[in-house]
Amino acid sequence: MSEATVIDGKAFAAKVREGVAGEVAALKAARGVVPGLAVVLVGDDPASQVYVRGKGKATLEAGMESFTFRMAGTSSHDEVLARVEALNADPRVNGVLVQLPLPGQIDERAIVDAVDPAKDVDGFHVVNTGRLATGLDATVPCTPLGCQLLLRDRLGADGLKGAEAVVVGRSNIVGKPMAQLLLRDHCTVTVAHSRTKDLPAVVRRADIVVAAAGRPEMVRGDWIKPGATVIDVGINRIERGDGKTRLVGDVRFDEAVKVAGAVTPVPGGVGPMTIACLLANTVAAARRQHGAPEPD
Ligand code: NAD
Image 1 (cartoon, helix red, strand yellow):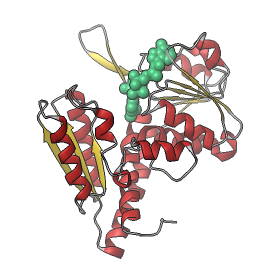
Image 2 (cartoon, protein in one colour):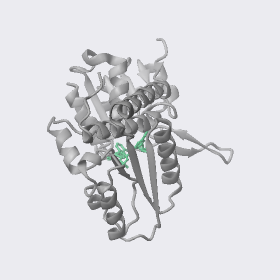
Image 3 (cartoon, protein in one colour):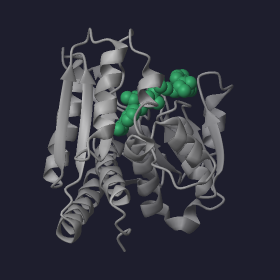
Image 4 (cartoon, helix red, strand yellow):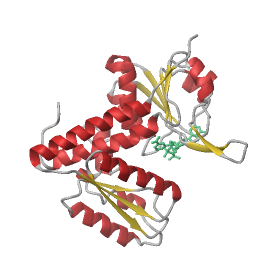
């Protein structure tokens, strides 16, 4: 059997970002509006700092304004809340993102729900979650949105219709919204998680597998139905054996590539799509806030 197609998320994300930059330019030309994204980072978690720097850089590259607010890890709940409320009221800011996780003294759910739903470009606000679940227009969380775009590109609308999809992981930021998007695309969806019995047998049924468990290389080649499309959301850093580390997904790539029809690599698969979709969500929020029409 021939090897799977390796889905190039980096190249696809570059196309999405180019489209966003075009939309930003059009919004500026038609209405004099430059979309702005504000990111709030509380504390000095190294991974969060890398993500926040990456988001700021990508925002500027798309021609948008980037505002980064770094707050001490000892900040109180009320201080973070006050920052979010100030950004909600700031007309230069169209998107507000609070980098998670937040330090323990802060009520994360309350902060996420304090963001104006119209500026909630992460799509984590309960209003956007509810709108997605009930089939209304909603801002969709960036990582599952990126996975959906890759799946549609690979399979086309008809390829998703009626397909058996298994999502491994039920988090609010990946697994659950991913399941909602697959339902919207008419898949038959199973959400598996840490208590699922006989996970390999469940995954083996799937035409589409989305692995988002945060377990390095857990999904093995013999779990995958021949020809299936495999989207690997996991980002796990593991020891390489020579004192250095490397990134791996939740799927054992070298095995999956021999069985699947298509598979995303880690890195270079879903990761770049997440930032591209954040930019897309921000320009869409700016457009809606200014009453500008959807692009063709
Ligand atoms: P999470 O820890 O919040 O949720 C993990 C989910 O996986 C849980 O629902 C849990 O039930 C399930 N799970 C855990 N162990 C399992 C097992 N042995 N078998 C079956 N299910 C199991 O994680 P998350 O925030 O949803 O992220 C998941 C992974 O995706 C992580 O590796 C994370 O780093 C990665 N991630 C990547 C991106 C990206 O841009 N590519 C974005 C967000 C998260």
